[in-house]
Image (cartoon, rainbow, N blue to C red; front, side, top):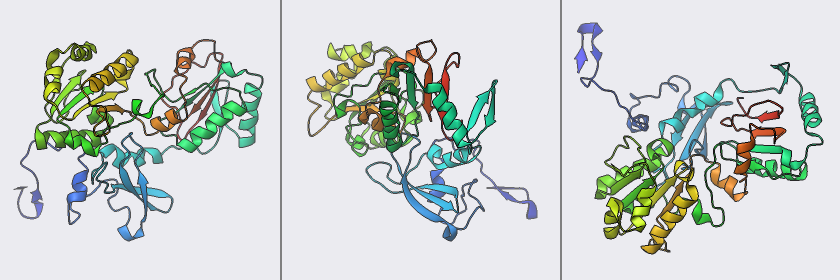
Length: 370
């Protein structure tokens, strides 16, 4: 509709609510004439001026295929790239607009803290300062934390530095303690695959909110529900997932009920042909080993762990997590020692979520924004 008259007439909507979705920016790609535009990109560049580079999204652990459009040194926009096995032609708003946040206030010179204040210095001064403060420390007195955007090559060199120079293997990628069993890949991968979620007739979410943690994956579950009315249960309150689901409580005893052949999930599991259990990092935290082994036993006892269908899935929140597990960066017991006198030096490699009390500790931070 329209409001006002004559030259003051404005096209508007009669709807009282705006679009509220973490996939809202995909309407930009749907518009054939460009009337719906991306506000950060509007009037920034002409399409033929852009260098187009195919890449992979790192804002979550899904691995959506993307195209990065740059003009000179600056990223102007990020668009989805078609991959029917992962994101089809969709992209989350977080992934589409994250480049704005990564552009501003970047660190471009080393800093040394003197009398509680950071002072710019040269690279030689920074390296000498680090060397003076870590020289003589034994391997058990240092700890390295890896951040969520660190690539595998960098993690490998970080591990090599700790081993060859510091004689230490005290490195972890987890900002909080949650259980990981690295003995077999199936224990920490998303085994069903994203595309085959559409075949699932039962989905059980254990300690995870896919709408926030993996938007594209959540859209696949919604697609399965719309196509075949897939039953969805949640262990833990996850709020609005954009499709009907039933919360069976926040206690992991709901999993024990399935083993005891009781409860709502068990009743649905009896008739299921392709069930899917998705365990999040929260589900692996306090009783992680119990949760993982219980879900594995449920699936194994009902013959849903086989070559045709593997219903066990671990949903990580960060793109670097699986690479870090491959490199065995799993020393979570040191996270408990960050704020006592056990450690004398902490090296934060892009680890912005780690909080360390600087008392009696030498802290090295290597990252893009500080």
